[in-house]
Length: 340
Image (cartoon, rainbow, N blue to C red; front, side, top):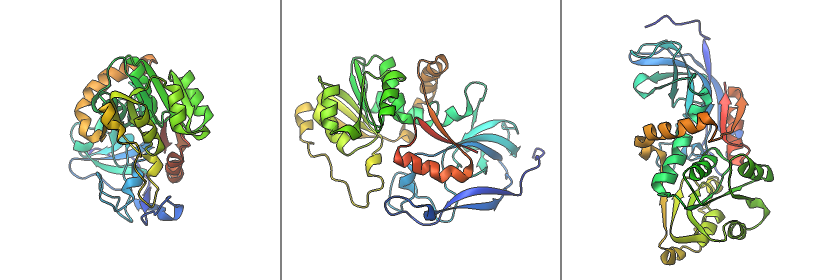
């Protein structure tokens, strides 16, 4: 093992103490101190520099059966993170290298080298590997191009459009020749961002009136693709505006994540019969085969400034939980990142 630099004796990490019912509460969590671990054979020790908080993490706090295993109680939570290797017991990764991994919500982590992805801080800022060039970006890319089968000339509606995924969906659609891109967001500030910075053709504040009415005004000729991050009234509105052979890709439904009772489904599903429309859910984990193509195509757009991105950065691991609450409230513009 390579020489280990002087390290603190303890690392702070967030644990889930109890499974939230409805909106998570601070008392469901605890920031605890743990001994800094040492890497075993084939492992590296990483000092996390940036960690991600994302809406899907709310689902992992529940014990309900889902696509990802629930977080264990009284154990550190998991999430995307990028950091510097400070000790290595693995070939091919040296101290000073930077890696992307899945042991966030803590200051130091031991990671199996086979599960670590080396990233280059010279090629792009480290935080982008958690967002625009990371899982968030791939989610937008795969959901729009594969699940929703976007094609040039389509009219596209994106909900949660000022968020990390939604803002990228709209811009990729524009760069690939969409006839019209419409976004919804939760504040006038975010609507202005969609129009002036991200290049959406139309945008509206869903808090300003019924979504169905605002969508009809923004897309009088209907929509061919709906990228759903919100669910609820947005999904019903999209079905109502769907054109013949329209496609709906369901990425997330943040509007119902904290519900204690099942949310009613859209009341107009029968419209799918006349439109021959389809609704399909997807998980980014099923589309990692697109990663090389995604980086090859989107990387140059990011570097040239053709594809713009925003990050909301919260400082300090002690504020990790509040940053997560902020995502659920919709406080962030673009990707929510915690800088440790």
